[in-house]
Amino acid sequence: MNDPVHHSMDIGDGTRAVRAGLPEPVKHEPTLPGPVFAAHFHLPGDPTGPYTYGRDENPTWTRLEQAISELEAPGRPVETVAFASGMAAISAVAFSQLRAGDAVVLPDDGYQALPLLRERLEAYGVEVRTAPTGGDAQLRVLAGARLLWIESPSNPGLDVCDIRRLVREAHAGGTLVAVDNTLATPLGQRPLELGADFSVASDTKGMTGHGDLLLGHVTSGDPELAAGVRRWRKVVGAIPGPMEAWLAHRSLATLHLRVERQCANALVLARALAERDDVSAVRHPGLPEDPSHAVAAGQMRRFGSVVSFVLPDRDKAERFLGELRFVEEATSFGGVRSTAERRGRWGGDAVPEGFIRFSVGAEDPEDLLTDVLHALDTVR
Ligand code: PLP
Image (tube, rainbow, N blue to C red; front, top):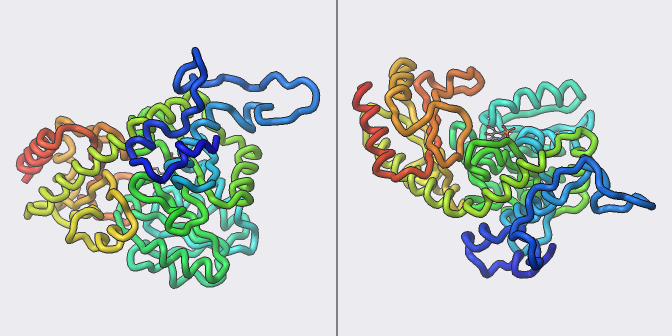
C-alpha cells in the first residue's frame, strides 16, 4: 500500500495518474483488478478485517482510495474515504466534526446544496455563519468556529480565496479547515499541502470526467479525523457501489490528459469571450486579468475547466445555449464533453439572469471556439 514508487514525489502528474493505486503486479492477474461485488466476505472465526462486511470496506474502494491519496498528497501518509456522492463526502465531514453548540463557517457563494446542509446543521444546534469566498471574507466571521468550510474556486462564481492565509488564521484559533476541491481536482490544487485538514470533492465532476457516475471523497492527513469520517460512512451507509468505484479508478488513468486539455481549452475560450462586447463578466482564474488570478496563481497548479460569463438577458442566454452544436445544455461540470447552462434557472445562486456556467471539455479547441462564437453571433 505504501509502495515508495506510488508515493514518490519525483514523478510527473501524468505518470502518477496512470499508476495511481495500482496493486503490486501478480502473475496472471489484471493490472487493475475488476470490481469486487460483495455484501459480505468469508469470515470464519474471529471477525478481523480488512474485509468483513460490505458497508465497512471493499477492496475496490481500497484501491481507489489509495489512488486518490497519491494524487492528493504525493509522498505523504494521508487517508482517503470514498463516498457515494460529493454531498455524502461533504456531509460526512460536517456531521462527523460538528456538535450542538459548535460554530461552522460556510461560503455564501458555494455549491447550491450548502444551504440545505445549513438547514440541517442549524436544526441540530450548530451555529452557521456565512461569508463570501472572495477577499478572504470568511476570516471576518471565523472567531471561535470549530470548522471553516472553503470552496475555492467557488462554484459557480469562480472566486478564489487565499487558502494558506485562511488555514493559518483558522489553525491559530483552533479551527479545522476543509476545502471543497471539486473544481480544481488534485491536479489543479492540493489543499492538504496548503495546510487544510480535509480535502473534499465531488468526484462526479472532473475527477472521473465522463458524466456517467456519482462519487465523492474525503482525504485527510490526520488519522483521527479520517477515522471519524470513516465511522460516519459506516453509520450513514453512504457507500460507493463497487462498479462506480472501479469506473472512477479506471478514469483516473486519464485524469492528467483530460485536465491538461480541458484547462487549456478553458483558457482559450475565456480569452476569446473576454474580447467580445456582447459578453460581460468573463471569469476564469487562469485569465491574467481575472480578479482571482494573482491568488490562484499562488496556490493552483492548473486553473480548472470552468468559465463563467454573462449575456445581456435570459432570452439571449437561452438562445445561445440552443444554438450550440458541440456543447450540451446540462448541469454538472468537469466532463470531457463540454456542457453549459444558464445557472439562474435553478434559483439557488445569486447570479444575473444571463449568467452562463460553461464547463469546457476535451474537444478540439478550434471546433469549440467556432461553435461558441457562431452561437454568440447568431443571438447578438
Ligand atoms: N461540491 C461542488 C463544488 C459541486 O459543484 C457539487 C455538485 O455540483 C457538489 C459538491 C456535490 O456533489 P455530488 O453532486 O456528487 O453530490
